[in-house]
Image (cartoon, rainbow, N blue to C red):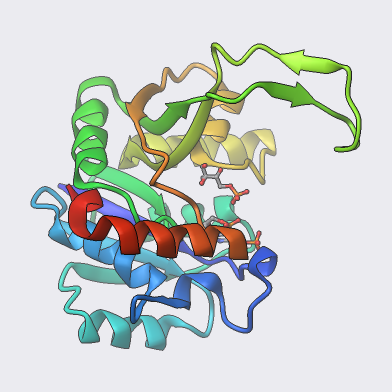
Length: 238
Ligand SMILES: Nc1ccn([C@@H]2O[C@H](COP(=O)(O)OP(=O)(O)OP(=O)(O)O)[C@@H](O)[C@H]2O)c(=O)n1
Ligand SMILES: C[C@](O)(CO)[C@H](O)COP(=O)(O)O
């Protein structure tokens, strides 16, 4: 079985709005629902779990009913960090009876424009190689700066991959990683892929992502999201 684990436990401080960004509406539909519908539409996704910010579970459930998200099976409690939210989600899935061999596609609630192809490729690459990370090659020149104001140093971009989500694992592998992280005192890795790299010994394979698979972090991202949705209509769903 293949399960989507949507992480929506963040409060969206950088967006600076009254409500968490995953619940803000774009095109008369909350961002998180656009995300859920991408997985709802995919024939090889068998169920969806959401790790949700405390206090928003009832709202989420009613939006899922309103927008006919029939695959939403589980809502788990959000954590204080992204890693803790993922932790709650994977242990929750295990408690709910999901099997170690099942695939878990971990995805940011605030990346609503992921395509069906990205979901398909995550499943295929994870089945074949074990660890699937969505990413795109870095096109920009990269500078390193201590203070964000001045620099004398550039970093070659040829080998750099900008990661996105989904990041996909067999449930037993992602749980093993979190167990090892607990033993080694790794508590707040930026993402599942950075956790795997910190732990070592896990070869990750890159799934081609898209510049359109943006993460809505700031008001500027929200404007880009609206523009993409309005200009592309349904073409990004393919
Ligand atoms: N404790 C957290 C923090 C983040 N996330 C989720 O991880 C994704 C990416 O995180 P980010 O954009 O950093 O979200 P926020 O933490 O909400 O934003 P900010 O850092 O601006 O407060 C989002 O879907 C967010 O809801 C989560 O599940 N649990
Ligand atoms: C998981 C992620 O979206 C991959 O690009 C990213 O690492 C999330 O980072 P953030 O610090 O939560 O913005």
